[in-house]
Amino acid sequence: MKSLLFFSFVFVFTVPCISQQPTPKGAPDLKIIAVHNFTINENLRFVNFDMDVKNQGQVAVDMNGINFKTILTKTAGLGGSGNQNGGGANLGNLNGAGIIAPGETKTLTNCWFSFSNFNLVDYQFVFVFIDATDKVKELSETNNQFLEQHGFPKLADLRPVKNEQTQQLDFQNDGQLIHFEVENVGRVDAPASKCTVTYKISPSSGNQNEVHTISVPAIPVGGSVKLIVPTVSTNGCGGPDCIFEVKVDPRNQIKELKEDNNILTGAILG
Image (tube, rainbow, N blue to C red; front, side, top):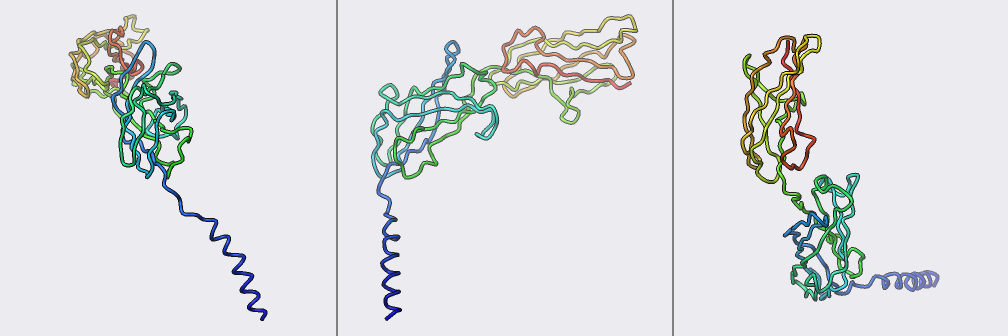
């Protein structure tokens, strides 16, 4: 009799716990498939883009009033320091918002982010979030973001080629000529430019620094050119090693992605 009463007690106690786990009902599930068609407005300092959003869920969702937001990062991840808020807005008719049926993909246009408070060159990645305020109850909330490189501004970027071991100029000296390279690591072809090579003459020699200016031909994106310049001809370059400096586009006539990578130094060992 006692065992029967105990069994009855356990049965009554445990059944309500099982009934508290209902089967999830159908819901929408928004996923950004692509972010593309970036266009820049330099004057107002914002970038427009389009994004393709798919409803992977079981219920249609009206995108009017659904929020998106953007975060600009220096690297391909949100974990880095110094991320910048690019802003966001509620979607509407301007964006082509409307109902997305289950399984359907819709392109939302005229989305944007602002770079009014930071230098866009330093933040090459944009994270785009859809339904950023979680207005829509979805099957999954983990696929609402998308990472893309925006590719702006579209400028060249000239720099002398560096020796990765010494972190100085990569060059060869044959006793009469210095051989080195200049490369374009930017996003557009670089026009023809100039380059100066300055030998740092020892003040005690009574001579001035020796400067050579050489022409640099146009360099396509990802390309490089080999340049040559006479070795120092003035006595007393400074010892025991002769230090010289290579500066690309010395008068800043070309607008570049970066202006702080145009100079490298080398040393002719004495």
